[in-house]
Image 1 (cartoon, rainbow, N blue to C red):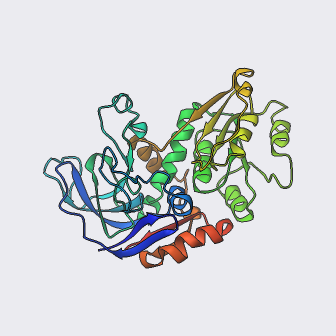
Image 2: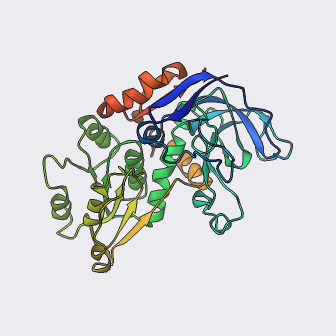
Length: 352
């Protein structure tokens, strides 16, 4: 079968590889329909390895080179002999968080931060391929007639959904979202669905500012045109936002997400960072501000996102800015996202 395989930084090859074998007892084999290029895939292309192991991963045994791709939908074509929750013919959007099931965080139901966490497509072969094997327990079965392109966005939207869930009640609150990329726009829509009365988005790209407005932003602040922190405080009677979400993963914007909130407010750090950020911890100990880190999601978040998509409170269509074939994944996918970042949000890939 054809697959896009990561070998090293700036070295992803579309090549013919063996089809995955028959699934293990607890696995299913999926024929991939669509798979989105994630920001983490882009980070690996530009600066990797970040998540990709160069030694065998403790859970999966996988190491580079491996097949990328974890934001996907497809049809189950084969199931392992111990699988009871998924059947052949089911259309699924799999959770990417492969986990051990026995560490303390897994036992708490927070398997997204398993001590041996292995993301499909980063620490195990993924879905930029015609077929992929994944654990059956990670498969969210989509309702009949669910749009497969929209379904490929459930995974990234679930990241924003979980971030909003961790923030607690947003009913009637002032919220600041840093970044209007795929995760930021998903977080924006989830915050509005959760009852936030005033969502301020901090973004510089003209195309992304337009999309943020389309997705429900109340205020859009461009740091090149104003002092964003001063404007947030001005619009919140001098106090600052109740909650902020850092959805960029930049060493400069992370401290701003803390500066943007009021005393006793919450800053949720969602972005993936390539380098460390300088930070004055007195901005926490002197203010009772709370900083919460969040990684990925659990399968319950997939259910929540699917419900919001069905109700129209989340919209996938504005986020999809490109639909390409696997053969074009470098030129029309990764390079397009790098060279025309302002014009793109989510590019999805068909292996067929």
